[in-house]
Length: 296
Image 1 (cartoon, one colour):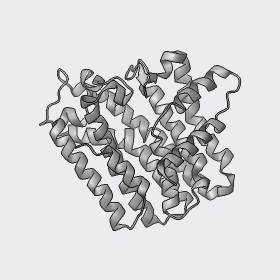
Image 2: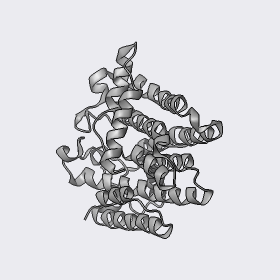
Image 3: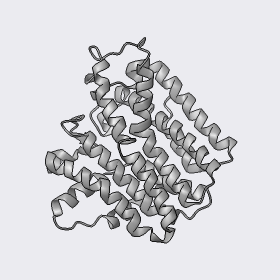
């Protein structure tokens, strides 16, 4: 399967998995953000990991779609006025701008539980043991040890900012930044890759390989996003540009500057390619993703 074929399949299945029922407003709110046009990186990585380790990628479709629902949940809550207060996401109005703040909060809450329900409802053929493993991975990444922890520390990091800049000699900041990037971004990448591998019956050694790959890829993706937040445009990104800097957020570029950020991004991408090569993991899709986030 090629990247665009995976995306078309995922879009079709997301639409099928999310009918608009009574009360319509909450289901419309949920579906609005989930089905916004996007790269679908996380579900694509889940399907491709399953294929790469010898599984049938169709077995991973419900899990892949559930991970996209979880990702949408994080976007809805991240955009709220009490969080980042963003008006646009992927070139469209954010959820709370369309449905109101209360319904946006509830839509995020609903997606958090609707996603694992989708896995359980459509993946019974995988068997109880495998489903339990997938659920363990999902709840670890979705909860207080995963993306929520990353969001909390991201919010708290603003207190270290002085007039929108950071003390580069502060020894605790690199560790805090790594924690934010790991849990806000890399955890969902690892969730996608690990669950796809689990569905394909990957060995423990293979799970370690793909976890290391996901960690580096997730951090690289976030560094690229931090760079683009300073150098790109609304038309290219589909969201308000420069808000992180304006609000004193701790980002890779605010701590290390653009030059080092680009150098470290390139290094991480090279390391990702090396993991694939050393472990004989062949994937044109992963190579395409890596090449796309490389910034010269």
